[in-house]
Image (tube, rainbow, N blue to C red):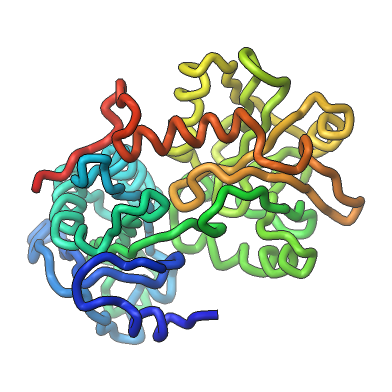
Length: 359
């Protein structure tokens, strides 16, 4: 497996990255802004990406006052760049900040950061439509203090990496492991926002999934351990029926799962394509029975990184079962094509989801 240092060494001095993998082919710039009560947002601008120098008593490191986001810029069919629904990410970043008692990044500053970074580093993205420029906003408390309180100073950063397919370059079905041991999020917690502390506790379950020869974890609700919630860090859908009129169903938002922007887009596209979108709770027993009797024909995950990823097999200690024929289903393929067509400008964009970057 190629290491981060190997990946960095393979980055060209200029020009597109041809084999980016996921999460390591960073581009050469970042956007930075500081905040304090006295000065508000200041020291704002684009700069070379660099290592951060922090005191070991930085509040964000000790008390988890750190939030993130994830969005993508795509090469358009006319070779320009477009960013998918960045205003939605700006709003969610603000919700995450409010939840952790942090200052909100104004939408105008968030969009400025996106525009300047994409304009500066878009030459690293090839015209291969399976590649994208993944943008990672980050904000953390920067006080040097171990007093248990919110920080009084903050830093907002935006970095980017060239991304290939999250599960590889081809659309292939993945296998998932249903976790009955741990819980990802609890009611009135932070499951519906993107805080850094949501992720590390999930790694042990992901390792268990790998041991079971599965690529991802299916999380159940924390109270009854009965209802489907998220798939890894992605939202999940099932399909009931086939053809026009098939139901495209995703767990309803209960405050314990992330309101994904891709999720919202899929619901809109499903309705526009003649399917029946539904938001309702789905139990593991219902999933198992529906797959065995043929009522549930497809299952897929969706998210910024994974886009639309079909699920072919579900496993837990009670055994494994197959969704449909185990291969990507027609509804999944159709919705993926609709989404990526809009993202790359090969399909109409009636809702104005793509924010075009001026050249």
